[in-house]
Image 1 (tube, rainbow, N blue to C red):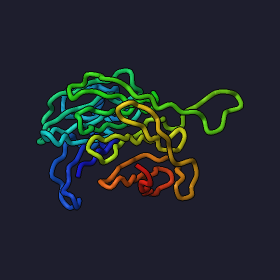
Image 2 (cartoon, helix red, strand yellow):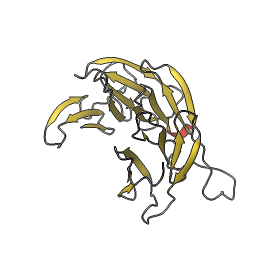
Image 3 (cartoon, rainbow, N blue to C red):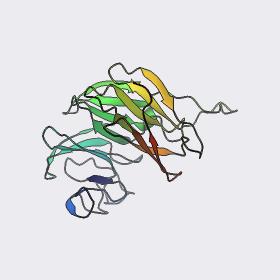
Image 4 (cartoon, rainbow, N blue to C red):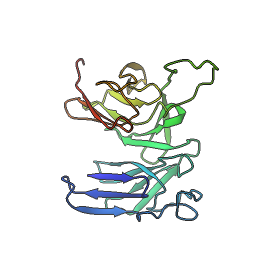
Length: 236
């Protein structure tokens, strides 16, 4: 079990039951910045150090560990690749993202990165070469009277895939609209969505994390709502 601790600037690996720490990458509280704190200038150092790691994923083909380092604005903006022991292998810096908020690998080896405030999910190869982007558009739930549209968390916050071998569907958290977008992965076509703002079952108050299990059930956690939701698939 891997954990990315954004405020602490480190990544940890535990046993499945969480009882034993197996590996720690980075030093707690020592960030990759000019002064080692969250107030310092981001360095994007080519090393196994982090400013604010946001996601971690292990490549099942070779054990390489991918870490997105950019949870907040004004921090690092990159994806770091390590070997299974935590040794730095490579990284790529994404200068035109405000924050690199989520990252995961698909079965075909594509690296999916959330451009949270840029309303898109970008696809890179394992070496960091941009392949394409999938837009995640949004519209305000209520149109502001002054016409000034403001984001409330971004429309591309976190991503996971359907459990079929081809991973035909991509589920994307859209915090701006408090809903989950269902996107056809191959074409980028939006097939629909579920959820709405609120505190009742099936409604979201800043939904933040997502996971899809082997049966296609979708699990979602909320920051402000402090709940975990489970949705089951009802159609193929």
